[in-house]
Length: 143
Image (cartoon, rainbow, N blue to C red; front, side, top):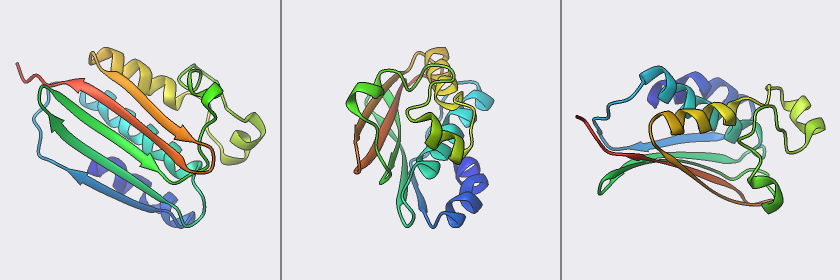
């Protein structure tokens, strides 16, 4: 997780977005490259669709028999009617605005498939103008 945050720090600085991470040491058996891409894509979107001077908070915690990875931002938010579609390949909430911000529309699809690969679940909370919180809940297992 630290690696993804470090890679995205220059983008955050350009947009004047504060990027912070709070983690617990957790041992998890999974596909490192896929997990890394999931974290990177969530954080990248949180920066891209944030307000100048906003913030992105990344947390990694163990909750009983699950691991919770949450990326929360103070960005533009996602309308309720769009939230069910944002994990579709190439789907963009606002195509004209997405084109300005770059990206391919694949990032959240990668997150969805990575969560499925690790038997995870995705939860989203978002409100227009008040930001977005996306939690990936993964079963805790080191077997």
